Length: 104
Image 1 (cartoon, rainbow, N blue to C red):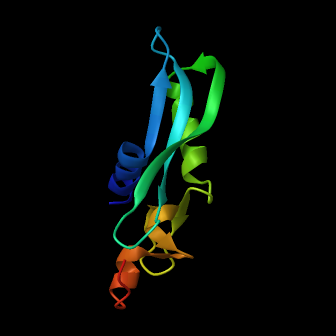
Image 2 (tube, helix red, strand yellow):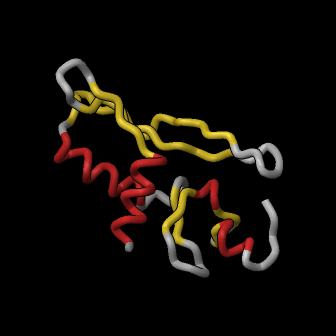
Image 3 (spheres, rainbow, N blue to C red):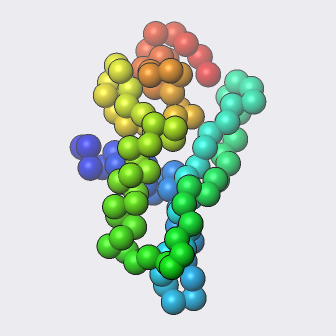
């Protein structure tokens, strides 16, 4: 279950950019911004640029570092799931807050 959660985070919130040789040059992470209720906006930000470019084996380590970066991801104090910070208020994820009648 934890591995599925990590794969979901990588698939939905992390993106790479490759050069013409298939090597990874840039690593992006998505930030969620909430200008109003029920209306999150996704903004892709450059997390790291690699010169020289790196390969698949090296990017796995970089993604682990990114997933541990509390600026972008956190663990919910209620359910323990790792989430993107834009889906959390302080240390509680939106799903757990909704169980306590908080509406987003």
